[in-house]
Image (cartoon, rainbow, N blue to C red; front, top):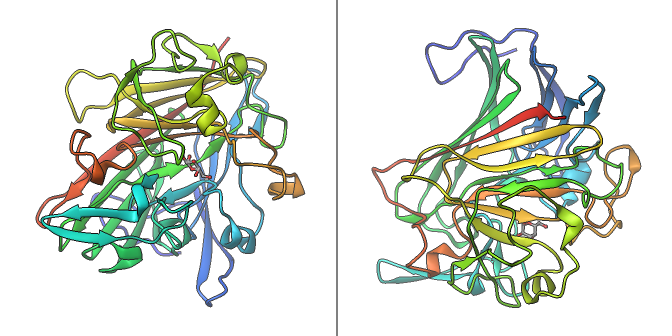
Length: 368
Ligand code: GLA
């Protein structure tokens, strides 16, 4: 096992991080799986393919463990995946209108892979890359540092982008995710983690009974191709108001134009915060039967709440169980979709000499 890690104050990994082969990609790249086990009782497996979180074992209020994230058993299934299950997403998460943007007077055309729009980094986004991964253990935390270099012109993006993501699992049952990137030419960057959660346990049914609270007074309504219109709309009096905890299914079928356009929730919420760049509580998710919950803090300005409306049961996941309609939900911390074309949205442009940094923390809890 390699004990090298980029930060000098880190010590060699112990048996709290396990490293094993996970297969070979169609192009012949070796893929590994890492298991992070923390004294909190949370155990997470991560693949070097896509940096994907494959499983998260979490206790319920009685201490019973279940795997609370959607994923697959084999590498071939991850290579075929079109739902971004558990993956790191980049260079830009979510949609860019018609795959076009202008930057510093130049027009760029990106890969179009979603009804004429660019989605989640294109045809081969960061979710399909084999990341370089090194484990670490530090002051009772266990973690991984994942690195990927996206070449100039990758899926149409300018500049060589060097990306580093770290997953740190703490003894306090937090998974802290840090994103870092630098570039040698100006480029948009919008990185996220695309875990799908089902806190009753993956394969156990839909997520409509989960209760959600979002610290978001506004959201970004979309057009029929799911591109934000540019408006920041108040959630008040709409099915998008999660300012107090609500069952996800309570209003999902209500007669609302935005729910109709997206076939459910698939919208970016504007995280309420005092000041910018600080960690703020963005979401609290609870599954009331098991008592499992997740609190999500982030430095990002937005959170895409997606109720698995494109899951249709045609693709099977772990244990051969199909990923049925709305059997998982994603809470993707990010900058707003289509930011490169919306000057009023917080900028996603990274320039040479600057550093992209963002942090998201999933705190696994039990309630009730
Ligand atoms: C995001 C998008 C959805 C969908 C999923 C992946 O959540 O907003 O529209 O593309 O990713 O299937």
